[in-house]
Length: 261
Image (tube, rainbow, N blue to C red; front, top):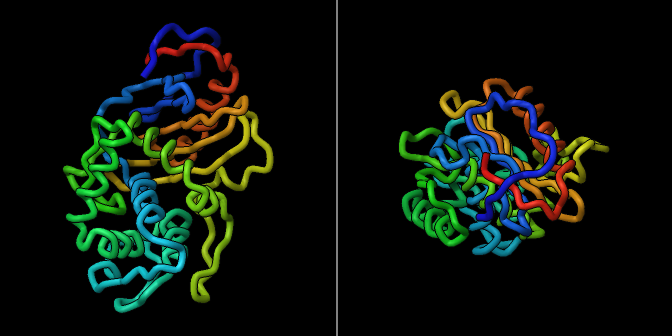
């Protein structure tokens, strides 16, 4: 990653435990607060699950729901054990509804087991440059050893939005899965206009230990920028600080060589 002095305004202080903004084309960090500190990533984990889904399954391929998958902790889509889903429906359930049951079903279908899928997740994380990630679960439900960093979640988000199937699911506001109507849980998707560019898509996350998390990709100056906020104390603050960080990034000269700061 590049580093060097940043020209231009500094953003207001961020209350979240960690936050970064990544300029994807240059791989430069436009903002960095504790970006390398391993933390609980909650459901931002599901961006990696989605990457493995679209790279291993075609849209009409089956995803099998086991009893273990069906009984994952909430939030769930509510599919019964023995159900077979289309992979594309599973992708939308994972990214829009943040369905823990479906994410687990994807893991078992692709990796054979949660442990096998976790190995695949961690290999992919290393390949895209993650240095502080150790995935244990496919859905981000709490495990003391399930960790990532704001830097790494930004890299995973940047990788995820390279896939049109993922972007389509991230941008969908409503979707129907076998008669179930679901809505996208990311409020940023519903913004008609923003002060920081075009929203591409992102993933929220929450557990009591991770607190509120959001990874969001946006287009600014014709470039993809990724904001990550981990450990915000309130949901409203998670959204507010994401907006603040991207507004700050939008003011920067695209040719600037920013610094981790």
